[in-house]
Amino acid sequence: MSTITRTDTIRLWPARAYRDTFAPDDPEPVEGRALPPGRHGLYFLPDLGLDALRPDGTPARDGVVPDIDLPRRLFAGEEMTFHRPIRYGETLDLTATLDRMDDKRGRSGRLVFVTIARTIGGPDGPAVTVRQHDVFLGPTAPARPQPGPGPAELTWDEPLELGPVHLFRYSALTYNSHLVHYNDPWTREVEGQPGLLVHGPLTSMLLLDLALRRSPGRTPATYSMRALAPVHLGTPVRLAGRPEPDGARLWVLDADGGALVSAEVRFA
Image (cartoon, rainbow, N blue to C red; front, side, top):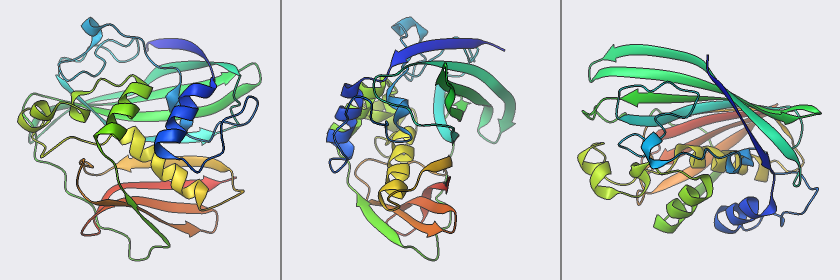
């Protein structure tokens, strides 16, 4: 299996830019303070030339996943384990390995499911381990996944109001060139979607933010997120959740209460 390592310093600016765009009530990032859990995704970014991208703008040759001869790639979910805080000013390594690859054929044609294992850490051992799930699809857009059943009971329920500037800033912050987040003709004509898609990793980060904002003083031990159906820009959606004895259940819900994203956090 292919493995790559990237080194980065946990600088203040990416976290400040995320805070100013998506979490204005968060404390100002300060050298030595802990990076909020989940925001490691703002660091260790791939540096790929245009010739290393697929037609949809996602990585084709990133040194981890082999060059799969399918033109479209989508984020499907992730699991995180938090071992210790990451602090501003630390210089850490990210090691990424292809954990699993399944080549399948469905009603819409060939699909390839991959799981990428990532570890972020340094001399003091791992800080965060992540398993990310992606799916590769052919040129024919499949039928759009339908929302799952929503929860019967909620404690937290907040509207999620995102616009084109939010998507642009998140793409810029994470060096994400996936066309579904900014190219409307591609999204409609090739992907078969009614409009631009909100980034899966962004909805994941916002759900974890919700759980931590509503559970002051708690530290996450694990977090898992699954994308059930696309979150479209301009469509009314809500961040929702409820506490549980050792964590919280979380969702992104559509206007009818259907679940577009489901997640779960467990506290230390």
